[in-house]
Image (tube, rainbow, N blue to C red; front, side, top):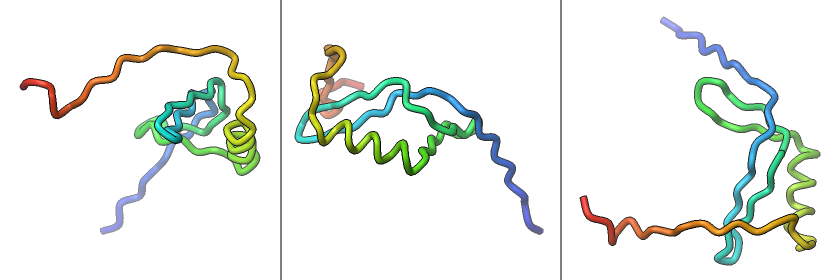
Length: 77
């Protein structure tokens, strides 16, 4: 018996997160197709090219955010 899988993709604006050289980089308002069931994000080739260009150019960011960092191995259960 074959089970058919029906994906529902919606157009959304997402925040793309990248870890590069020990830094976390956020790019907001990135157009993506998002799977409604799984949350998986899919980007068009032109969007991927623009993301790469944005990161490689290292232009001045729009803003900075401060985030807490926790080490899982130091946490108590």
